Amino acid sequence: MHEFTPEVEALAQEILTYSLERLKTDPPLDGARSAEDLYREVGNTITKKGLGGKKSLEVFTEVLAKACISTDHPRNLAFIPSAPTEYSNLFDLVVGASSLYGGSWQEGSGAVFAENQALRWIADLANLPKSAGGVFVQGGTIGNLSALVVARKEARKKFPNITKWAIACSAEAHSSIKSAAEVMDVDLLLIETDENRKLTGTNAKAEITKYHKIANQRVFALVATAGTTNLGIIDELFSLGKVAQGENIWFHVDGAYGLAALCAPSVRDKFNGVELADSLIVDPHKWLFAPFDACALIYRNPELAKEAHTQHASYLETLHDDSWNPSDYAINLTRRTRGLPFWFSLSAHGTDAYTEAMEQTLTVAKDAAKLVASHPNLKLLRQPELSIVAFERVGWQKKDYDKWSEDLLGNQIGFIPPSSDQGKPILRFAIVNPWTKIKDIEIILETL
Ligand SMILES: *Cc1c(COP(=O)(O)O)cnc(C)c1O
Image 1: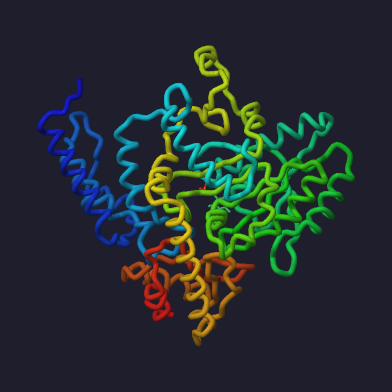
Image 2 (image 1 turned 90 degrees about the vertical axis):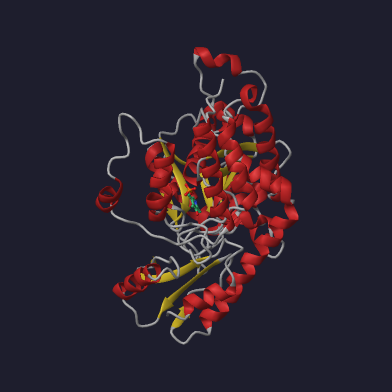
């Protein structure tokens, strides 16, 4: 049945050789090129007769791949980079080769079973009840939106007369919360943080009470951030959860980056209160050593999500029995079993290895903060709560930061685009890669 001709066989070998080389050797940093520049080199790759596998692969490996920055380079500390384990990347090849359908139990029961065990590990770390469950979606943005849609549906049931809905969060919440509010056409109630820049129950309660004073308007979800993306600040989860409970509001914890550290005993108590969440997200593609793209979206009561997200169509009704269909728990129908590379690695290495790798990144972050604090030209912004180290270069303007960053990549030393905090340019190291050693930090600091 398969057209596995000698030509395909040869290509398979080439692809495997390339993939293994990529995994075995230190990744190059590389960098972006303009579309014009790329076109000059490769031309139009979509042709009537096709270039053939060998040629297309060559175009990719020789040109296109080199125009992509390696997110797993140990000195790529930009945004939130990634650091998939070898096992997870290798298993991604299996997922790709297996044509698995991850939307329904009927079609993908074995894969969905495995994904659910990986989700269970996270739910247990968060101390959620046994009934908790969810789905791996594409990313935190879709995870947050999917959870908030369920939250609003619940609120509409409880408060049928409300005409204006709002999501409450701090100004430090991730941009995807604002994006969700826009998609859902609801208000965003931004609540002041405290002197430590954390959202607190006290402030949330005051603002929410004020918002509820106006007839027909209500907050339907309180969003806490468990590790802000820019600085790694964790909101006061416990007091926020209690306020949400008291006000009959859905409590969502956005831990796309930070909740990964639930498996690290040294910081676990910073997440106390996460067990009160009605829903939470964490991206294994950020700090849980899995490849793109995977966000674990977990609900305390998945039945509510099923009510909100199950799609109905004549040809789909055959799926709607009591079995667990991942499509029913988020804004998605057809889905790749994107949780499997994470599951495989977790299953193979065991959870202790995750704890160890996590603690190691936290230690490097702590040591990096010390080096920054004692550096004559640098000013540490705050002690890292997790693994983001943010600082200023004394005396520099925005253009100096830009130039430094450009040179750092140009010289293939590292990738650290400038960020900003409260209107001022800053630099930040987002350390999620166990291959990032303190030596890497020293190499970067020498350029400052
Ligand atoms: C990264 C991030 C998101 C968005 O996740 P994507 O996977 O990029 O869509 C949401 N919230 C927080 C706190 C994040 O750090």
